[in-house]
Length: 139
Image (tube, rainbow, N blue to C red; front, side):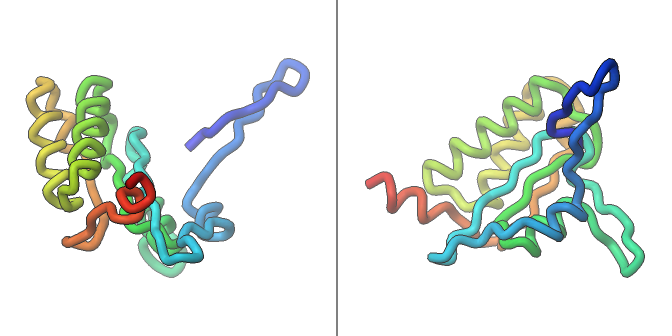
């Protein structure tokens, strides 16, 4: 995934983020045990990749680095379903829903956006995961 880039002379040099970089440098678990949600609402970010020793990819890399959940897509996603899925997913989590229930609500809402790409979303998380730290801090 290209994060940014720079121009050197007349040449564009991209800066990449890949699963290998995440595995090497990411430390996501907080000192208090909190674990972030990593949501890559980008085309094909949820696909598994192959490594010399087995299956890899962003999901595995971020979860091993301490993410509490990973959300990505298996293929290209239309703009409207991408926006709708993300907004509905986060709204549901912020209202206290579990990750699986938030995912179901988000898929249903994205499906109503009228584009079959809503099927592309994959979510890796504990089946009872909920937001908790954020709510405690905001009270």
